[in-house]
Figure 1 (cartoon, rainbow, N blue to C red):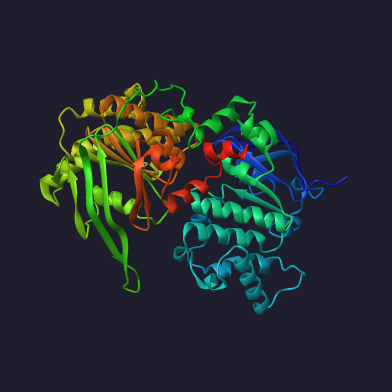
Figure 2 (spheres, helix red, strand yellow):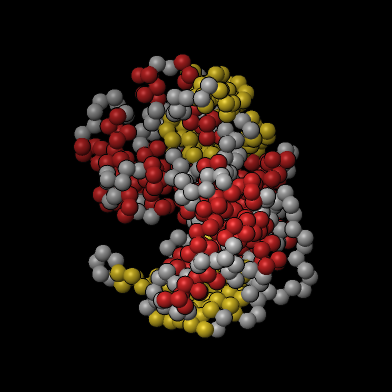
Length: 550
């Protein structure tokens, strides 16, 4: 009988908070065979990362662990420090979440990949500089990066390249187990597909065991043989990936699956997963009409370090009409955010015109200020967008004060109610750290609504939110469109989000709009090769592809 590579038995973890012990993991049992792949799914606070980090005793000092963690038959919980240090990197390693923060910004990536090699030389003898350099070059090649990138600093790499560096570091000492904690969070769909394919290939070729942590079931199903779903510190469902995805038994598993809609699934069209479902979209509704916000032949360029001109936005024509949601999709670096900044008057175009209600947008003075009241921005990360020292009331009141609106208190409370923070008095005096992620995003939306705009530009509005909260925020955007006639330009790399709430889609690639049309036209019958590649990269596929594959 094969000895399990990893076996967790009755694992319990508590955190000391003041004089209390707060349970984070309760009675977890998991088994992973050599070369096996296991996905652990759950929302923030479910305990999934705590389970993963406990395998190598990487939890903070406030954590108390009981139970058994057997790595190759050896109990990690009772290891001496010297033995534990030898096990880390050499026998089991971690691909940490957020490569941007995990990598040292002032050290070259080659030096960072070399660090575990110098700490844990394969033969037990220190490696020469030449041997280390050769191994670093080999590792970079394995993760599809040119060996010459060893001399680069993290800021000189894209998000996907940084994630590949993290994988190279994890592979450096040829471990038998890799723990990947949300390895594709914040990556666009094409880079995500590339990273997942790379991980899948490497663990198969090198017979490495893999534990992958994610809140996205489709990502885990595309990579792992088995999936375990955690909720409130416990495993509520476990089984083969196809069974967990295709026939989920637990209600929380079903909620996780519903939070990431499948492109082409009619059930999820204009129907975000929410505790308060929206009524069906009126039959025969035609979105749009007279353009409210428009870009005409817009061009924006920058100079790189060598002085070469880079066209970030290259002759774009785009309209957003009253009472419609337009999704602007494309991978990182396609020009989406630059286009949005230009529409908002935050970036001056080289040429072209931005129009609001048919008139060119003023470039300064009172006219630009009045325009910015009508077209408001909803930022991507509510934690960064909100001042931690300001109450909810102060955050929402900032815009009305700048524009000197009368009856500030009534304006703020009305905006909080519209953002579904009810009753407003309950939230007005709270600080951001006293709110959940979804509540913080609602505060950001309320700040935009306080000025009663006719258009909101939402930059990745649910990218940083848990699965269950995504649907609530998307449903809120739909309600605002229906009840207030609010138009929205939603910037996203998530095609499922576009299918879920948008009327039209504009696909951006290398500064150009390569395809526009209704959601059904663009996502179900794409014409441009880039749009087809975006759809092909979806980890869960589309409803059409699933039907063909059955």
